Length: 134
Image (cartoon, rainbow, N blue to C red; front, side, top):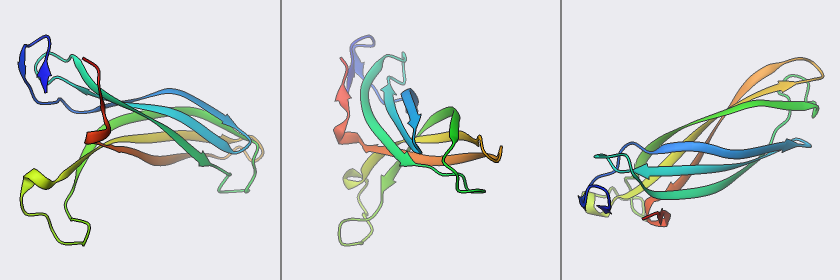
């Protein structure tokens, strides 16, 4: 992709993931996760994807539903689809599908038994579904 600031074709920097907003009520966690691809040269945001994440959570100790979501952290990563639809390995790198990932670390606490724990979740989007920002 051509960066408007650098005025040349550039590669992407490491993906960045952020949680725009989240809501926790009645055992249901809903979060808006934004994954951003930036220019490796200047840091200009070039592409983004926004995904909605939903999960039902109960306390692993007491099974209670009187819970509180203390914090959600995220970091970005990427992976390649290394096998085709039939399960055969893809030998030519041109045909690998790229997925960008938001690793979510969700800090939870139970108000009934005072148990605290961490939930780890993954939100991913295929590179071809990202929207261009410039």
